[in-house]
Amino acid sequence: MHFKGILSAAVMALSVSAAYAEDPLKIGMITTLSGPAGYLGQDIRDGFQLAIDSNKGQLGGKAVELVVEDDSLKPGNAKQIADKMLSEQGIKLFTGMVFANVAFAALPDILDGDAIYVSANTASATFAGKECHPNYFVSSWQDDSQGESAGALAQSLGYKKAFLIAPNYQAGKETMGAFKRFYKGEVVGETYTGLDQTDFAAEMAQIRAAKPDVVYEFEPGGLGIAFMRQYQQAGLLKDIPMVVHPASLDQVIVGAVGDAALGVKVTSHWNDDFDNPVNKDFVAAWKAKFGDRPITYYAAQGYDAALLIGTGLEKANVDDLPAFRKALLSQEIPSVRGSFKFGPNQHPVQDWYSLKAEKGADGKMVLKTDTKVLTAHSDSYAADCKMPAD
Image 1 (cartoon, rainbow, N blue to C red):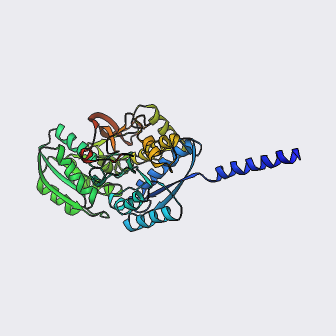
Image 2 (cartoon, one colour):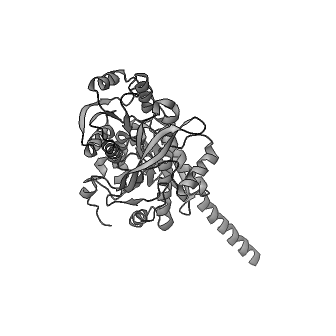
Image 3 (cartoon, one colour):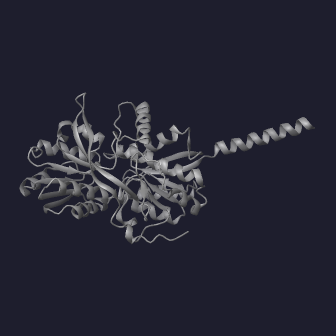
């Protein structure tokens, strides 16, 4: 009897352990994996998963499983995926959306469904000010910061006349206003392009006719590759410099366009040459797993989003929303960017830098960190956020 009792207890213990092992916390990642912008979501996914793998399948000491779905850059798809993850899979923790128009479709259901969303990329002004939400956290940036940093750089470089170009969607419109918030010179032209546009001949003609001192261009992913190549082919690069933010010139784009990136100024909150322990670990882990595959800021943001979630899970369970939210707001947040903290609207307060495209020792184009553009920069909407207390 004594032996049977011991055996029964052992079997029960093993069953309980197996149950815990078989039930990791599911994290829903809705992201763009296909089309010209597909590598953006792929990098966010792979950066996030790399953080999980580097911690032996855990974040914050808890076993997790990343559930990934492709929204195909279609808002309707994102909404359907979010609804399915909430209702059928019981997921309470989300991340991954790349584009603002996609996020707008899915976020209301996620936030109103008592789930947490941690943005690893897009963060529209809509959710940064009066419509801020206690379940909405941003580990990347507030979208306007990209345009603001580029405007600040253009201003510091002394350009008097600027031409602005961006895709015709929410983030594109916001980045135009953001650039002008910090750039005090004359805007001699601005135009919007399609999110699936690859031929920019008409825009090149507009730029040539406007005769600006500088072009501010926001064309993400594959659109940026096409634009920069055509800009050089049109002969504009040698006469009219460009100032962009990282969505228009990341490590993939600079490698793809080669010499067409020479002389282009880019602002960013992160670069792979940042000298801090978290970034060094990330870069080493990425190279060990993916070899020579470029390390973009999308991958870095995915990695950072996972680290942030790990900070929360280390101190609380997602089911206890007040405790988990409090844990996410910790001021000691590990980040590949180094210094990082949240503002009152749960968006980052962080530094922005100027990067320059140049040829490395192997003759390939790389981005090198140059100077700091903005210090401890917050967004323009934080003061309008009145976050309810738990």
